[in-house]
Image 1: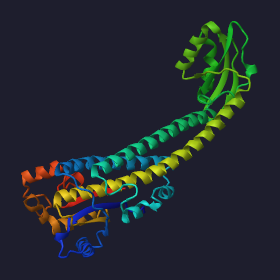
Image 2: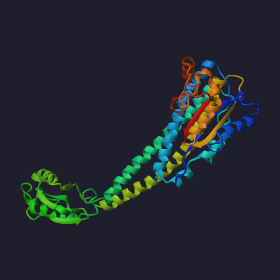
Image 3: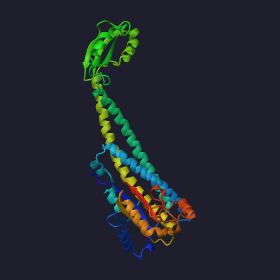
Image 4: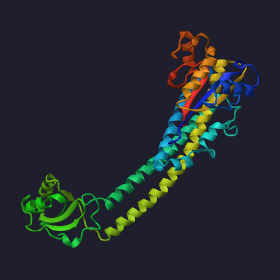
Amino acid sequence: MAPQTITYALLSLPLSTFDTGDKDEALDALKATISPDNGTVLPFSVPNFKIGTLDALVQQADDLGKLDSACEGLVAKVADSLRTLLDDDKEQLAKQQFVNDKPTDQYLRTFSWNKVRYRADKPIGELIDTLQKELVTIDNDVKGKFNQYNQVKTNFTALQRKQTGNLATKSLTPIVDPTLLVTDSEYLETHLIAVPANLKKDFLKSYETLSPMVVPRSSVQVAQDDEFILFAVTTFKKHSAEFQQKCREQKWTPRQYKYVEGGKEEEQKELDRVGREEKKVWGEALRLSRTGWSESVMIWAHVMALRVFVESVLRYGLPLEFISSIVLTNSKSVKKVKTALDSSYSYLGGNAFGRDKRGRITKDDAALSSEMAAAGLGHSEGNEYTAYVYYEFEI
């Protein structure tokens, strides 16, 4: 059985929720609330950023929500690129999906803010702008290289098909003996027709009367494969178009062919050249997708850290006394995690939050909820209000 996809939940709670002023003790209390059966609770390090005005924080919460969605979209897109390049080989995929030289799960478990790359003493708006620009650059780089790879691969596949397809589609350069063709006549022209093998008798019986001025008994079998027989037939040039059209009506395929000196060797050279190019661009696309994965997940984690901070400030206020953590669970247990959190911390929402026995939200204060919505606060998957800062995601 394939291992279950990890579901991650990021959350923050005010330190005052716990009967302690110590963050480690508060984290232990949170672990007891969620219970090891339902998920693993780990600290999620969020620096103390420079706080601007309330209006700026509300705008930043909105910007971060949009950037969060963009990050999620890019991570999914890069994952698709890697799956395509590696033919969905799970073992190979796992080797490529590293973030800063760590497996993705380990990176998230041990996340710490990159203070060298994103100085925590910079304004939050500036950090958001930097992360946004980096995300766009990665998106463009990965998309551009992957599109280039797809184009080269399409060309290579088309050339391979010419070499390996049936007589109705493949290149006739290595197959046709040019001495079979009338090439120097002012009036006559030789046509190459791919006829389904089961229609051979019909063809031989009727090709001479298919159109006017077909040269009698001019049919020559040139080649045969499992599906088709290739015939050469000579007609007068002025009836060539009519003969070819009548062939199509009979489900026989006229093939275009022109003898070129050294054509066979040139085709093979072109196939080899495009094959080498395909391998080269595949390698480049894989390297760029691998870098794109590392960068996009890393940016997403930093965006989520900022989001947790901004919404914690908006929700819990000053002084900055909250604990943030990441919960590792799965799609089945995440509901139990949520129920345990709601059971212990729903009172944080005051009159704006409550649930009946079926889990439906009750006592919803419309004014407060609309304020929360305007600030983009407390919404998990499905835009459902929570009494605490909570985000759920999968990678």
